[in-house]
Length: 162
Image 1 (tube, rainbow, N blue to C red):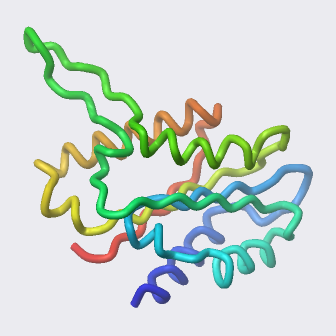
Image 2: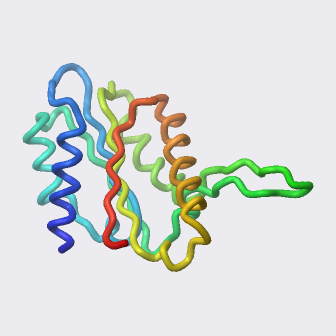
């Protein structure tokens, strides 16, 4: 099951990124919960995207964490004192992810960015509403766009179950 899911993610990722190789690199960021942490991209994912785009044109960064909810990547805006909405902000897990991404791309021209998100089922049991999940995910993507200075990030969202 896990390998079928990852192959589906791979096919989606390859199909959302333009295949024309030129003077930029294709950055693939793989992140999420325990299933992403346990996934080894080296025998399947990385060789497939390297074959598609050329080894010299691919950067793959993976960072996953066990059993953490989406709000551990991004704390969504919440109603604060006096009825005001407190701004959302990235958290420690997002910062840990960026500590791997930034050195991997330093000094390199990035042609495309594909963010592959594999969130486990623990949020279904712990998160208050779908709106909380959506706000946290959108906030994380907006922060990623800002940190990478891009508005054209390809998104692939994988799920294990409903």
